[in-house]
Length: 350
Image (cartoon, rainbow, N blue to C red; front, side, top):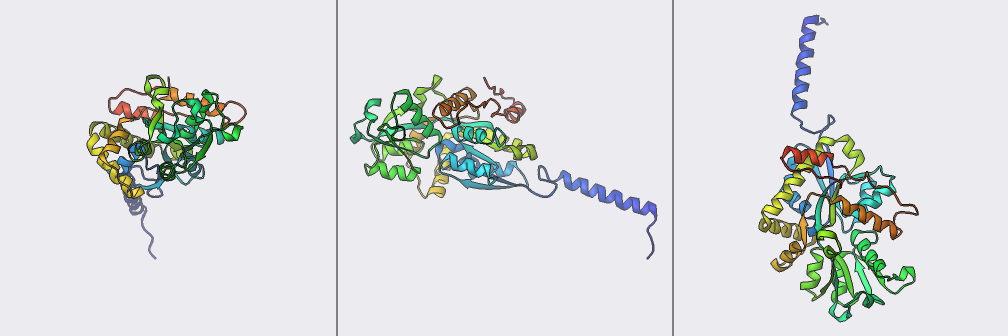
């Protein structure tokens, strides 16, 4: 076989190098080994409206270009955090307390909070027949929330603690019953529970469909009526491996928050369509308007309230015997980079 001359060999090498370079330029943020599958977790809750709207409009998929977005739906935060710790999801919308718990369980290595998603939208609703008009009336009552260790569960337990009430687990009389949101609706209607601390749209459904009354609007327990209800978190290993994809998703996250706030009527329709697809249940205009009235959509994680929620979780005994340091749970650099590119004010941790 005749050997190629050295000049001809050099030309082949140059052509191959240029072809590879052009191909690399055309893959955007895809891995050199091919497109990356991004596993996104969220709930079918209105407090997760950014996820619902971003997925439905295709904003997230468009942002990550050739990479593939796969979605996973959960009922409550602890299960979602377990999926993240197991590596089954990469980025997720979740309440602050499960995120804090996952961070502490992994000694600060597993995840980062990179943005907020909602403030408010969590209420303690009671049955009229339960005759609950003051904290003392909670003695002997059955109160539900979505899952032990979840954000609403921590809020409920902290509220009881603040009013010197103990759960049956502590030798007291208030029986906390964690159950999924759909079961809460059924049990409330049947009179099997006396109240529930739940996120939207379930709070508004208990009020409008089952004639429940608002005992506590959690916003009223916080300065300026603001507290983080939902955050956007990312697996640390995924952030380190694919910072470009995370930044692209953050850009879509910010744009979706702006879209919701600037086009609320259209956003409500999108959310309703997504909820129907995920839960086989669509909602009346009255329920949706009520739910969105009870919360704010924001990409600000409201870090000061996050730290307060971590303190509440610790005092309730969910974070071990020694108070953990969670000051590094938040990484706002990627978000602030996106905000700077849009001419928006940066978010601080103060």
